Image (tube, rainbow, N blue to C red; front, side, top):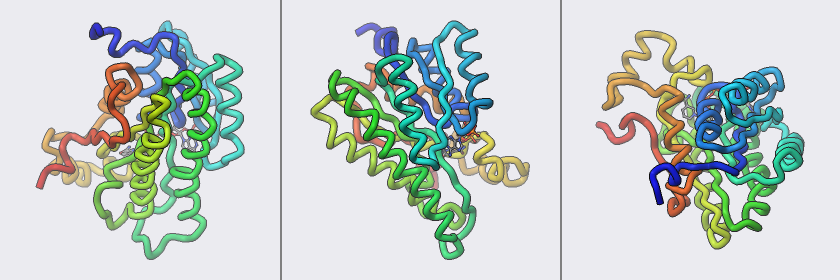
Length: 257
Ligand SMILES: NC(=O)c1ccc[n+]([C@@H]2O[C@H](COP(=O)([O-])OP(=O)(O)OC[C@H]3O[C@@H](n4cnc5c(N)ncnc54)[C@H](OP(=O)(O)O)[C@@H]3O)[C@@H](O)[C@H]2O)c1
């Protein structure tokens, strides 16, 4: 297979949750540039529509379909919208996530705990359950869940979020097992600290950023663009024998002392 064919998504349809900005946006743009028709989704029409428009202006094909991933009933709107627009979904990127609790697990409210697990785990499964069967009918499909390195280590402030991201890694492994015979691949990406609004509290303060940067062997935190290549690999024919894995994309922070 030629290098270009390895990363060619022509004729495919990709749905990316939480893609109006940050990591999701660059993933949507990369998949579009590789030839996929892309559904840009986030809670608000007014934030995802301009991203779809920018992809169309750049010569790609995209549509905006809002879906609040904390509200399970909106999953049907997203899937039905994508299916009625393009009739298929080949690549599903579960990228949207929430973290309403920054602090020790001992202080989390039931409401915040439920919100994290419902949005980051349960609704990802509901979305996969809606999308994967039509992939299986064609015996081809890729599911990518954006996890986090918070899934791999204990953390005194991000424990509840880390539990949800560890569950996402297991979700990908189990989808890989349950759907592998239908040639569905399911994987996670676990980013390190990436300069987005989501993680602003961890990088905005220069002192905090300097401390964080010092722990990264590559000498810097991540930019959203650093995550796009991993997503393209896992979505495309180049990744066709990779399944059930969590690909850590973190500048080396988890392997350094
Ligand atoms: N940044 C990091 O350091 C980092 C590290 C590891 C993992 N991650 C993971 O990376 C993923 C993307 O985060 P990011 O850093 O790119 O965040 P971001 O820049 O804040 O973008 C979040 C995106 O998700 C949308 N969104 C937020 N809540 C949503 C919901 N309930 N339902 C649907 N869409 C929602 C936002 O748009 P609207 O506001 O329009 O809804 C936006 O498009 C998340 O899964 C996060 O856990 C991030």
